[in-house]
Image (tube, rainbow, N blue to C red):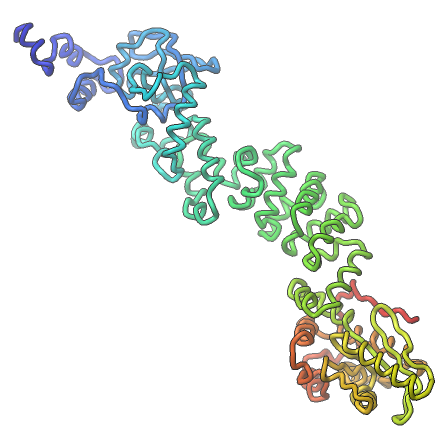
Length: 557
């Protein structure tokens, strides 16, 4: 072919080009690889790449040394001297055109022939890329271009975290997760941090952390020590979406940041996790745990029994002050009953009284803490006693946990009418009416005065219940002084002791029943109901009693 013909035919290949293909190649793959590359290109070798091809190359480097053996060295902005090979180029033939001080974009990883060293495993010459605007001049400008491109296209579950070219590079061996890209790390974490719980569940972070080929991949596994970096990239309120961190994360964190890890663990439900993991994270003895506890209380009440147990352990060790949770209880209201054990006695007592005062709050409180149902029922109960012969009433006494008093002590017909009116009002305020032998005696007297407690609440006869709980007792008498207010207080105290013999579920059901309409039909007022319960009550002379830490006895005044 003549020289003129060659110039007229752009597809014609010069002798020098063909000679280069037939000559032994200086890079990996030899002459056949070069020939395949030339044939597959379909157009001249100096064609340029799109930005998308280069966007996976995070480093902006400068060529500082080239050899005639197919490799060279480049310097990063951080001053690293990095080895790169001709075969690692997006188009290896571009290596021949490189000169010192040329700019190349690169990514660092490892090569199967040199697995222990870190080197450039993919590169492209900056002047062989088609730039939308000006080409980058340094690392900062390249980061800016990459960020704009990646933000629009980044999907963590996509192939960008497991590039095919790196898998193929390692051929039959598993490709290591050692590709380095700080910007991609930042953007992936930001994208994941913005996902909701459903998106995270579909993403499957644990699987992603095991399949991604970047060095930051392990941080996506909440149990891996590298997960500590999530503290810097994910808002504290979103960390629980990743699940509770493992003990190795706590060990990796600096002492100054361990409170953050513990807070993350508790918010993610770790306090209710398996005992082994929970005990490793929440010892109840570390100062950073006390700091975490304070932060958690400032953001909301404790969640779950495990959380409360942990706080109790910290208080026992003296790491938390007396009444440390009082301030949180003021804002939480009835919800603070979830951690009643952590409150000062004064605040706890006030909270229980407040919860017991109204039907709605009492039912809500029992739903939160069924174990406090007996205490709440006792605090909302009203006991009364009449000193009467059936025709003339000499004394009327009433008692609540706040104290007892006489409504009538002698007096004429007018005083009696006023006392019975006050008694009727007092009984209507209680969730349950308590008295000794009231079913057989006192209720009949009240009905003569137009008062029927069964119409407005439940009635508990302590004498009838005592005969069932302690059938072998020599006497079931109240043992009072026959002073109405004192006997009412004694009846209320006996009622509270009787509740201790019964299961929590009984007090909880009675509390709920006392807050519903149609309460006069409750079997609590009949001996037949007590007989049906008798089989479930212990018949021993000393039945086991429920924890009565919060029992509040009435004051006798």
